Length: 248
Image 1 (cartoon, rainbow, N blue to C red):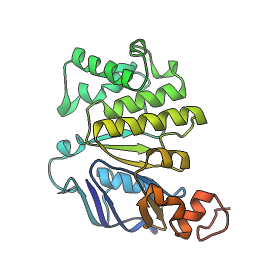
Image 2 (cartoon, rainbow, N blue to C red):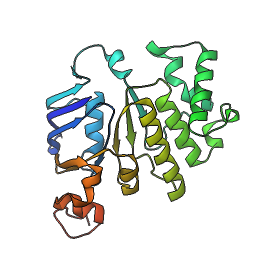
Image 3 (cartoon, rainbow, N blue to C red):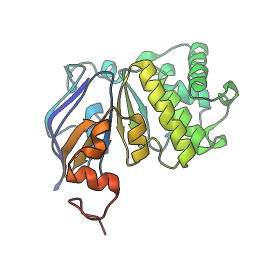
Image 4 (cartoon, one colour):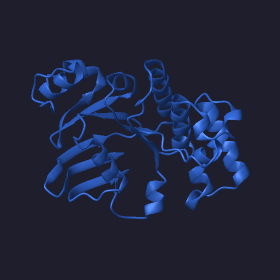
């Protein structure tokens, strides 16, 4: 569903991506791990077209991501943002139905509200939440609303950017389970970037280790602990000793 071929991206003298090669089969869940500042978010934004690669090719569902109808391309995607990114001035149901109320997917407000309430229920929130505002919800509930928004238009591909950041271990587990269930039910292709190893093990079918601008290792999550790759071993153990230099 997603293929990156020798993708490079630099910002001035900072060469963030130095030839990323990655394939994500349709209907599978890929988790990209790596330290802060290694280019995980840049890779995600390149796939979406929010950042233009300096060189290399990106294909989505067999089509060159740099060509074709932009609205049709973006309609394939849903996104759960790291900080929730809810609109403070809009009630919850309008946050969830944001894409359905605007642009090429526009639907009547009553219909969009019904879909929003249905998606809220799917992530474990009651219908009475629909008319509240983000400031009236806890962090965990806001994250669920963000997940409901990500799936509101039934996308083929869902991106998760640090889905458990800022959540306690119990709520992190709840969100991880919801993500796994929803991705499986929808048959969607998922791409997640995270530092949270519990999320990796709960969400991933496959894992890719991004370091120094390239994919150092990729394989099934079942092989993560026996990868034999020094970068992966250091990252999952949290050791200060290894090829990944700790920033002091």
